[in-house]
Image (cartoon, rainbow, N blue to C red; front, side):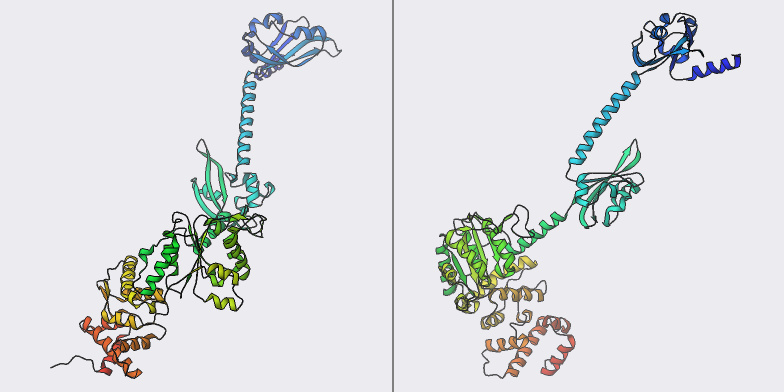
Length: 579
């Protein structure tokens, strides 16, 4: 071999990362490259031509020379405790004669460290995968390009997409409505919170929180946690429906809030007070707006059950199917759409307290049978259940229609009627309790002042005369409405309600108002047109005087246009005299 080729071969051997040691047939070292120098800790000049056992005391090359058998991937520890893996091969000439041996070995200390780290990484990866897969929140991860790289089983259950549908696909692949949180995070490098959107083929409403994945300051991708809000929305709707029907679980009023000066009202209050301390069923009867619910509150608060729930239900506000499930509840799977696990009914919600059933007369006959069972047996049967549930509920019912007529027509069970009508309390209409009118006005004005932020002290004597003459078909509810509208018609600094502030009473509008006024003044002998004219004249005079003949303000207080006011002033000759 010429010097050039020998130099090239030597350069190649010294360039390799693996240590190489070669011996001749006598076991003397022929090749000892730089990697061998570093690994074994000896210089090539000290080793070449010397027996290999001197250079590497525990070498196995002499065994290969003796046996001619190669040794592959053998572990070996050097004198400096470095662990290597070596391959020893015999070297033969063209005739097959053994002329030497060569060993190639590598330090595996670093490889072992890397293997241990890799094992730890795999364990950590397995742990993280288990955590991600076990969470109930759907998780989606994309890379820095916005391509899907990971989803968990909760994601598949929520969205309805499999890994094949998402992995390697754009971040927008699962969005039905809304903007991609992943793309927003990748664009801004900032978290995104509570983003609302609809996802998957079913357009399920969700809320998404997204965060950037940063490694040493470099953006590697985005992770999003997706929460299903359809169940929350369903529960919210159900809660709102219950709120609108039940109106709370606490009684607000007592007998101190009941205005009772008239004999009929005093009698009703005394009767209610007597039965309040008993568990007996009470039936409140009276026209709409007379205060039946107020009595129900007061009876509950005067009873031993006052610290227990007070549940209010308007039977007319719900259809038959919903009223039955709300009153009695249902078990899991009782009907299509039933909430998982079932639900307690309002009778159970009121257990230990009072259930107020307003407008009991509209209750369907099929529900009346179940209601009768509650009154007789003190137990309810949930829809779909096979066993009854005992309850302790005091029932206060109310009606503004004659139940006797409904019984005669076959629209109300006779046996239920007698169960309810044990203690009937008749609440008189407002027209039969004129003694209460002035005190009622003061009571209602205090409440309306708080609602409207006003300081109205009372009503004018003329207005009270109109009120006393009016029949009040809407009862106390109508009186409150009239006073409220009168306050709205008043100036902010005004404190007394005058006739010009009061809206027309009843269905007859201004005609009814005029008749009331003429009746109040003892002008029964007038014709209708005369009564109307007189009422208009007096109303216009008062308005002009109160507003110092400012016709714009007077017209506004009367609720008419300025043109109409001028026409009436001219018609009735009400212009002020000039000297």
